[in-house]
Length: 525
Image (tube, rainbow, N blue to C red; front, side, top):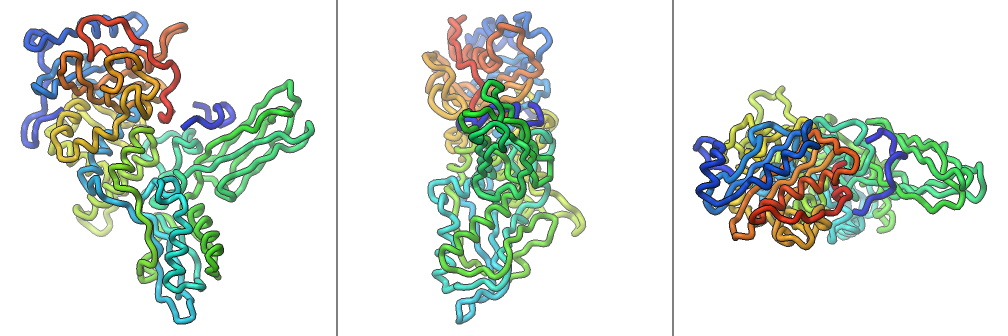
């Protein structure tokens, strides 16, 4: 992906043993075939096509009914996971804090004086809810908090409104994320105080005359503090070439190029440079609408600054809760929404750090790294070889997030035996039904059967999940394809991964079902 958004299209539509036992070793294929009747010849023939000569395939299949490994192909090779890494984060948060946990967003402050004045600052404290502003119960979150505050008799705030996201410690992006992704919607900054999925909508419209500046409209207003625009209106015959660029860490958006006269408006979804600040501005507007006077400024506070809550007394004056975590996770997995899973990783990390404090006061571990430690603890419980999975972030956007297909399948088999197994499985996209698999596997035995997490970015395509074969056997599988550049005229890469997964459901060599050839909606790249 290029570093300039002008090259992008406009807005897109939206198995293991128990703890204490040795990791599962791959079974010799000939023995397995004799025992189960599973015939891998069709898969082997598909993977052996000359066009895959320079690519890396990894496949593992385990029977959940018998516990036997049915098939492996390079299954002990570490491979890039893309968004299938979200399966590790999902299990970690379902284990702790659990599927029923609801993430709070709070207003904290000091004493309310008899005249309605709030002594000192008002703190808007985020605690990691990635759905604030988009979940059904929080689209009017700022109005709800302002009304609760007014219900406590507050008429005036003598200090600042501090938008505080210091509940998470560490940088606002995942380890190993690529700089060129950070201004795009799928690379939106993570924050303990997220709002509207940390995305701003930019509309670009031509003027009514060639040579005049193009019109730019940003929602929410001022979500990007400064736009330096050199976008002009060009002749209709020349078409449009819109370039948008915001340097990592910068708050200024550079816009240049042209939009053709009489062209329809073009829409772009851009990551917010400071989600907490945007949330503070939205709350300030809601306070004004409620008749509450803010005498100070709207300021944001981030790690590594000291937490604002310690300077105010921290009394909870108002609160709004997210949907249950299982619902948040389902939204994140179905859509492969990176912000959701990176925020959830850090929520798991905050909990893990509270139970495993550092050895000395000077030690520092970020919330995301603590979340990774929580996942590693689960891997140990599952009896999975720790060298077979390398977690770098909660989303799989990092190319340093690696796993073997064998370990992925062992993980799925272990999760299937846990109390949270139903919530985990319900979060997965369903073939031909919803999420990133809605356009895949129609009119095939996988339709409304296969449940799996997709993973797609440049040179990486994976599908990991569960399916029931036509013979009624319940399977966990991982199909991973790395470093494949399709030759001219070849099927789409997602089609190839789908075909291998489809072969798992069938008896013998099937007539291959063609999948939707476009990218899976919502994937990272």
